[in-house]
Length: 454
Image (cartoon, rainbow, N blue to C red; front, side, top):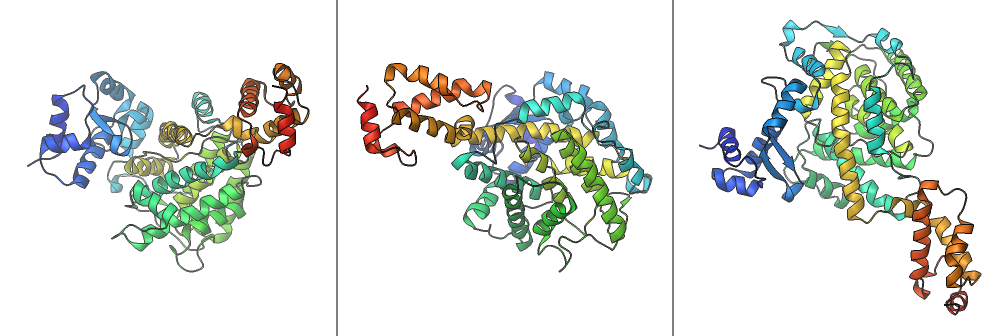
């Protein structure tokens, strides 16, 4: 009977070949599609195979010997489901420590001194190299504030990816396709619990709140409580959504016992948020929010979801691609979180963040290509249209157009964008006709007079 070993044997027989799920299924015999997907996910999670492509275009092959050697050097965790390539040797060792049986690990509770020891802009959870790499990966021209008609489509991608991945990390069984249908068409997946549908729809409401408030949003108590309310509505007891808890809570799978008491939790929540707002680097602020909100457990439930969504506030405000936690293995995420609970070590979660952020950026850029998203064109559209209208009204002759544009380029066009802005103005002029003058403030007569100069 076929099993994961059979599947791995097929891939080993053709080590350099990328194979589809259909090809693999044909080679190992009749197994359910879901079973095959689970086997492939487990093999990828263990670092035995590598993948490329998305959905029907996804392909699999045996990981190369050199890559396997690299994983071992990076600190593979023997007999673990955690993808070894993600973690440094030091952080892999931390993960190994919390794989020991619960009864062998020391009890832990919230340590105020850990928060107190963090000094904004002096302490750091990310290394300098990690922060530089993240900024190079994620910086885009304004996305959420000045992205014209493209914002809705880019927003839809964030909505789907973040909702799917954040819910998946909580055990939600909606697929990516299920999530997309629910969020964009309102169609629930058949046979799934209502709680899973509500979890995803709550993400939709919370993300919409962030994007609507992007100009003024800060990580303060009001914002965090609002995010929790939107994420937790109908999933916690009546009156608990958005309210800092007074009672005790337990976190399964760990020796960590969060503190209790609304007054104390409110004080600590505001203390950590004040430190977060003081952090200048957007990625350091993002990880700080992810870590400290998860650690405090200020609400009766839905704390990690609240932390994940709060962590993208500094990114969308700074016009960085949002972290969508793409492809993060739930087991790896859980264990990295337990490391910070029990050991107050952030390294594994930082490694996961960097690894996933690259994938989040790739998906964002792919979506931008699919919809024809031109960030610079969208950013400077009002200025470009104003220049085209003025050039037409002045009936500037074709021979003098380039000179006129150069002389009149607005001073607030970034130097690195000027060449692109120039070409966009020229392209709009080349294609200008009566169907394209609406909103430019020029008349058909203006256009005809300008064209006579040609």
